[in-house]
Image (cartoon, rainbow, N blue to C red; front, top):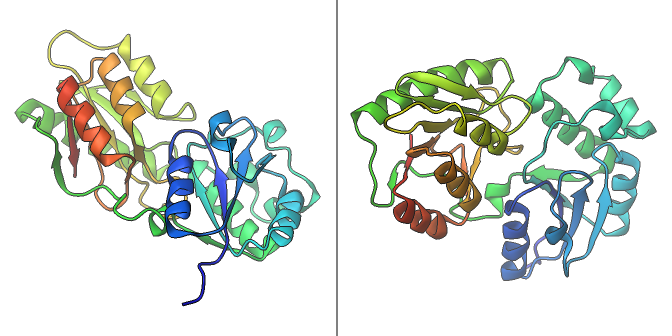
Length: 272
């Protein structure tokens, strides 16, 4: 049996990149981590072969992929859309992104364009995180002991409608609804900041529901909605009563730990 091709892990924030590293080790697969400046956690780079690059350092990424014999690349972790200054595009990135007019793009379109440019300029194949992490996609139904009641299910339905509109406009993936009221929608700030912001907006009574959906036009190799232990902790601190995420198009990181936290904090988690 031929060995698995060497994997380049372009790491954003959160725990998901570490789970890909663990999966590679379990598979005996060679890997190299490219930590995105201003995005990846410092802990991601501990005790692994790595380099720190800006998202726009295409030339360095191309040279590194060649030097490290990287065949496939996965983009994983939270990536906040950078400004042009933060992107730090080198000449190769400028050439690639000039073809698509990056100022006209939303978050998903920008990441998709970056992924396409990486394939074209670096000679690698971009694959999905779920191709590495078995069983990580959200499954249909309730995870844990807590179930949504009738009001919560109405809030989920309302959140789905709003999230679909957000997604079609390539704005965000997440919505928080409480008792029919939309407390907040995700834009450039990301889900964690959305949850924190809605903590101060909550009404009396049953708490709100976080709804996470992939964008209808989204390439599933890039930035799928993700739920992990940190999401549960933040939701509990904000007084949310549950989380609903799209089945087969959302990533559930540390499933057993998420189930445990959901039961401990009395929060439902459901795949819809």
